[in-house]
Length: 350
Image 1: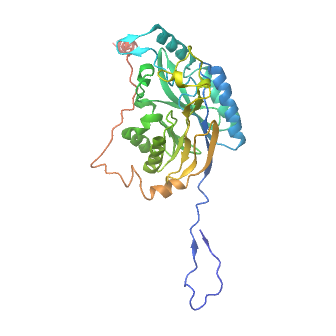
Image 2: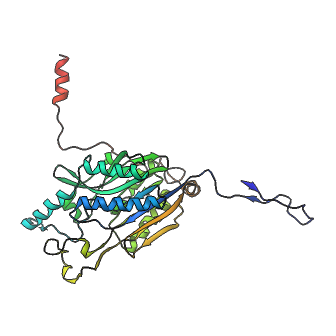
Image 3: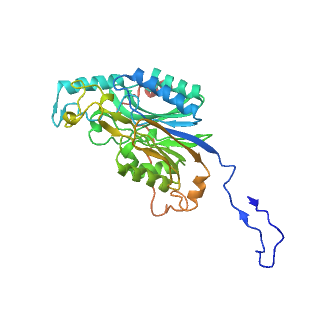
C-alpha cells in the first residue's frame, strides 16, 4: 500500500491523501497452460512423443503448470460403441477393446516414468489425462507430477458418463487428491464428474486453489460449468479438451464413428475443443478456443483467491455445517482382501 504524493492542500482539497489499494505484490503469479490437442490414437509411444513436443513449447513460453485433456494418453474412444447392446457383444467390439486396453498404461509403469522425466526436464508441474490399465480394468485417470520429476498421485474418474461405463471402471474416494505445491494447491476432476456437487465440495474442503478440469465436452454449456466452479470454489479452473478431426482416428473399417461415419470426411471436426482458463472471480483469462490445436495460457494471480473468498467462501463463512455436512469415504475399495498375512501374525502370538 502506498500513499499517492500530494501538493500542499488548498482550502477545498480533501483532508487526507488518497490511498492506493493496489494489488498485493506478495501474491505469486503462476504461468499456466492448457493443452488443446489430439491423441495419436492406438499409438501410445507417438502420443508421448507429441506430449513432449507440446511441453517443450509450453516451457519455452515460461509455463510453470501444464494441463492436458482427458484421456490424452490412451485416447478418448469418441464415437465407438464397442459392439455393445444390452445382452449382446460382437467379436469386433471385443477386438476394439483389446486394442484399446493395449493402448492404456500401467500406473506405476514405464510411461509414467517418462512423463515424470518430462516434467523434470522442462521444470514444470504436469497434469496429464490418461487411460489407466489395472489388470484388465481400465480407468479414466489424471496423473500429477512436480517440476522435479516426481510423480505426486492420481485421480480416477468416479463416475464415467453413459457409454463410458462400458469400458471404464469407477474410481473411489481414495483418489481425490489436492496436492499442496509451491505454486498452489492443485486438484482435478474429469469432465462431467465436475457436475457432481458433493465431489466438488470434497475438493473445496481440501483447499483446492488450482482446479484442473480435463474434459471431452466441447459444447457451449461446458463453459457455464467451469465458470460456475470457479465462482463457487473461489479457485482457478483450467479446462483442457482435445481438438480432433476424423483423420486423427484410424480410418474405417478399423475405427467407426457409430451412426455418423457416413457423414464425416477426414477433415471433419469431431471434437471442437473449447479449452479455457477461468479466474476465481469468474473472469475468462484465456479461451475458449474452438479454432484448432493450441496452447492456451494465462497468468494466475493467486491473490485473486482471497479476493474472491471475501465474498463467498463455500466451506468457510458461507457454509452452514450445523444444517448441511458431507462425509467422504476416502479409503480404497477392493474386491478381494487377503487375510493370510494377518492370520500368520496372530498365529505367531499364540
